[in-house]
Image (cartoon, rainbow, N blue to C red; front, side):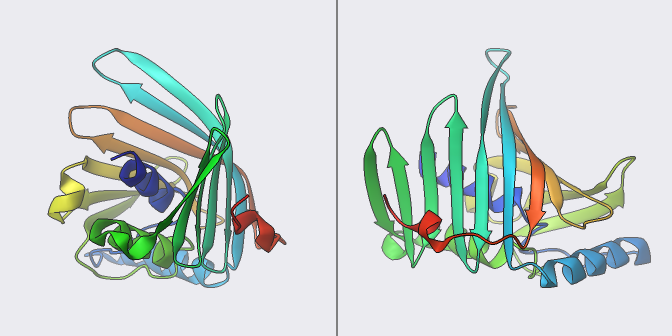
Length: 209
């Protein structure tokens, strides 16, 4: 459960969507085309993030911060506050580093794990904005960004989420914030800051320590 939710958070942080329902109007279709065009030129991404977990039952918030790196099919998601926690996807493995310990999990060890990982790797740059069976998606222009609303189609995803809202920068055409609304009313908002497109990233960041 912990790994699944973490992977879903990474999945929607830095891409528009893996499986998108074809837009019914010209405006939405043009939005999708422009996001695809921008994503085609992405080789690597680096950014800071702030994650806020809103707990409906306790009426409280849990705030954490960190950095995200993506390069050529490799992904590093690193929490730096209020605790240290690292999640890496590289070479067919998920690497988890916490409390001085390292755990390496073969992605193929679980059908669900592999399914979510495939979506993450296919979608992290937004290059595969296309029709599919994972989500029903609608897009519209908001006051400050384009909004994509994702409603899960697959049973596995519907067990965790009611919907996911993405805010896409109108100039850079990449996701700048994600709101995940869970079953039961809890929601998580992830905001990306200091986004760098195509920076030089050392491969060693994607190795186990």
